Amino acid sequence: MDSSLNATRRARELAEIRDGVVDVLVVGLGATGAGAALDAAARGLSVAAIDAHDLAFGTSRWSSKLIHGGLRYLAGGQVGVARESAVERGVLLRHTAPHLVRAHPYLLPLTPAVRSAQARIVMAGYRLGDGLRATAGTPRPLLPGPSRLTAERALRLAPALRADGLRGALLSWDGRVVDDARLVVAIARTAAAHGARVLTRCRALTLCGDGAQVRDELTGAEFGVRARAVINATGVWAGGLSPTVELRPSRGTHLVLRPGALGGLGAGLHVPIPGERNRFALVLPQADGRIYVGLTDEPVDGPVPDVPEAPESDVAFLLDVLSSVLREPVRRADVAGAFAGLRPLLSAGDTPDAPDGGRTADLSRRHAVITSRDGVVTVVGGKLTTYRRMAEDAVDAACPTAPRSRTARLPLVGARPAPGAEARHPGVSPAHLVARYGWEAGAVQELVRRDPALGETVVAGITRAELVWAVRHEGALDVDDLLDRRTRIGLVPEDRAAALPAAEAALALGRRKGDLATPERVHEVTERDHRDKCDGDLHTGRLT
Image: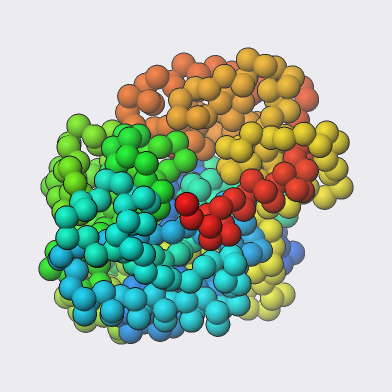
């Protein structure tokens, strides 16, 4: 079945779900909800998946972009959570999303603030994490082991570090996703390819064990959806639909630094947070030259906002932590933007490994599947890395007689050639397209071949063709979808304003009828080209 999501398909499938009964209704289209839709559809169940806003509208787009092996959880004694993280990281790297998830190096600078005993403990933790990698079956060439670097080597990889007193650095490797929102889009489109009806702008007003009352947010029309099983995957908003679920949300804030703010940063950084034993700020360079810096862990009280704001106190805190290891402090003017997300952490009453009343930073990242008295299955907690396992557990609970899950070896859209497709023109697609679209890069490039004007760069390396592609195949319905989720242009307000006319033009062009250059029909990327560009030096562990 076609994996494309667009306004035409939405209208058709919205009409279909009013007239029948589906096996599974999934509410929420973040990573876990989209994963549940895919899991159920891949088992042969009929699925409707809805979201009040858009794909990856909530927490899933505000992550640190890490696909990690759970080292922090191991340090906290949460061995089961760490093991699960390592296994799911391996699934993404090897089987389901190798085009979007890759290995990345991280340096922990050995400054005078990091005592020798602490460095030994951290390195021991890195080695334990490497042991988890091995037990999870992830090959070392795919995810290299830890090592210690000299100060000279550390400064080559991170020239902005303060050289005075630097004893070197500890090098570790972990997974990262090129874009968390793009991962969710790939999951949702793969679900659609297996027959799931993926419907954004559909708000669940009430839930019960046999369906939901829904409002189409584009028209205001209300209607019922009948289902044999219902899964609530709305994250921090889960309590609004299942009042028995008790959450303690925490806010994680990230900064977006302008290109060049830290020189030529060749690796990520782990910066120790003063006064904390096992917490580090993360510095993660991006392909477009920007740098993400995070992350805070602050409890959030009161109503949960649709889009949380990053307070200035969080910005100042992160700048202070980062500047503690740099030759020159990062200025506030170097911050081009900031974003914050809310983690759907279970209260301590539901997580026995965290004491009640403790900090949100100490709460377990273990997920839970809770079934209400009326049969609604709610899945909460967890993290981006383990979305697939969370989805599997939710479908198991909702549909105990269904076939077993297939998603551990099911490639997402772009990870493999579409069925029956051939590389008709063995040319070379641009590297940035391969990195974001995998095997679909050729189909995106085909739009440029047909209309060269679509090859124009809008901002941050994003082309007009990518915006049109998002409208025709990735379910983008308005400019916010295009700029804030299908691309991340909107993270920097000035870039967003500059790209707005191009986004509006792409919406108009993308909705025209005609040959849509579907990925099932057009593939311009050869297998060798795809492998070379997706692997690269970082993927194989080679550092300059």
